[in-house]
Image (tube, rainbow, N blue to C red):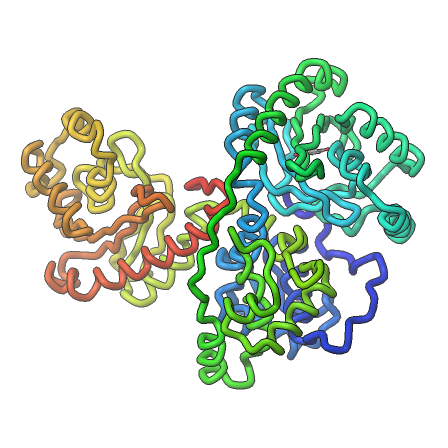
Length: 560
Ligand code: PHB
């Protein structure tokens, strides 16, 4: 879902003044990241100045530092959130463990019900999604991981509010008064009818009594949901599981009568999973961040805001097996001086991204507000495009990314070199896999099991006088491609066309796509191709994979 407000409103509830030790540049950096997130992932630098209230020169320096960190791309006077930023939200989700432990149960339930299923946690007086198993429908509105909804307009809200203190209720009332239209929740349409406060309090009592809650079109006409709390072994609500439908398929009543029993069964299995989960082992390698930020400072001088970079990377000290860290542990993980780590933690706590209990700090779901919702809706094609464009600029030949569809490769992204005689591959175009460099990478990367049978079925016809058409020869070529890690094809698809390709692998190491550089044969010899182009191509694949693996940690990334 896209943002419904072009310009995000300022935080409607008054924020207390920052503590004296708060790091102002870190606060500004987070304001810019939140502004970009609420604007849907991209915004003009001057618009960001308006929404954050920061001076344009400050925005430029903040954006420059975030770009250097790989957290945004700068495109002229626009800033676009970059996939690497998801490492912040990943740190929170990995520390939380719930997505890793419960994902299969949620996805299995969505398959069984043929409806979307989500997991949400409490975030102040709102709910924030930590997992989504989405069934695409003509009539569907789906939220993204990290989206924040006001508790009173959802089904999980009343369940989570059963745990609220008097102070939580007071904060909720204050927010409702300050923001009667829910403008502080850019993921949803503004509140139209005045759902009254008494109604929510009644729903909370019902939720306490029954152990489930419904959302009968509180967010939008048509959208209905039923929710059940998932309890941790200590009895606290760890998260809430929801089954979501549309009134064209089910009413709220039928959701309750037909889906609730199955939702409860799945939740019981989730609770058993939580009870049985062993303690995770903490990976201990320090991040070496301090050295990195110092090097960047030397390189970029005054334009690089070290305290912003250090403050944000404090977030990545947390993760699986590192849900709770003391100040010393944060300092040790990041390589930062204790005083620096302490001030960053104080700042993050002030902004609600960290909570402290005794001497232990932990991340809050609000970390997901730093870019996660728009970035989680990306595709491999979108991830790859800026890297292909950079490759095209460096090698001055056209580049593309393709995937296997049957016996063909289909182009999913392409960047022409802009030459007079250019190799222009149209996105969507299909060509036979056996005669192309990307195709050979993809065929060579087929799972070993069944590969021989699959290749035996490929029908090969000569496309030029050089096309390999003998299965035994193709098999030998593919064995070599696997060994050498690249495919070079000379005029087998088209006279005068040479191309060289390498694989793009997912987190499990499976080949999911191939990228290549295409050129007229007269541009370089085959040897020059291997010597000059292959390292560039490998470097580009590594960058795409880096982004893909960060994005794909908690999110399914489709090709297009
Ligand atoms: C959702 O997962 O999209 C969802 C869950 C609960 C609601 C509304 C939407 O009340």
